[in-house]
Amino acid sequence: LVPKIMGKITGLNPAIILLSLSIWGSLMGMLGMIIALPLTTLMLSYYQRFIINKEKIKYDEVETTDNQETSHNEQK
Image (cartoon, rainbow, N blue to C red; front, side, top):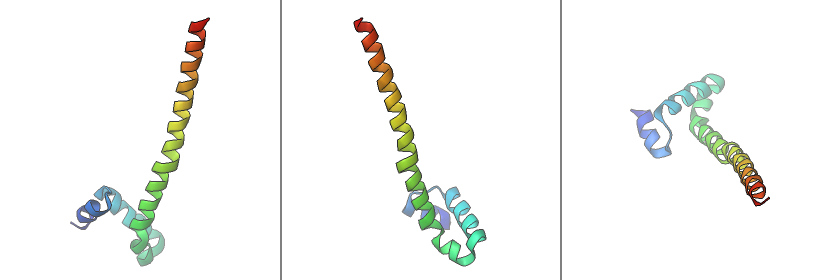
């Protein structure tokens, strides 16, 4: 019940909430369980913002380079 409610509030999957609480709780005890959701949310935000965007930018650069080479070859 609690993960489902917290999932609606935070936007996280209830399974991620349970996993987060158990991992942080085992690492740091009660303090880990208190800071588990904020830290997990920050880590997921960082992953989505920087890691995924870097991969997307690299993919876009490769795609743009391929399109430029194709149009350059067609002009010849």
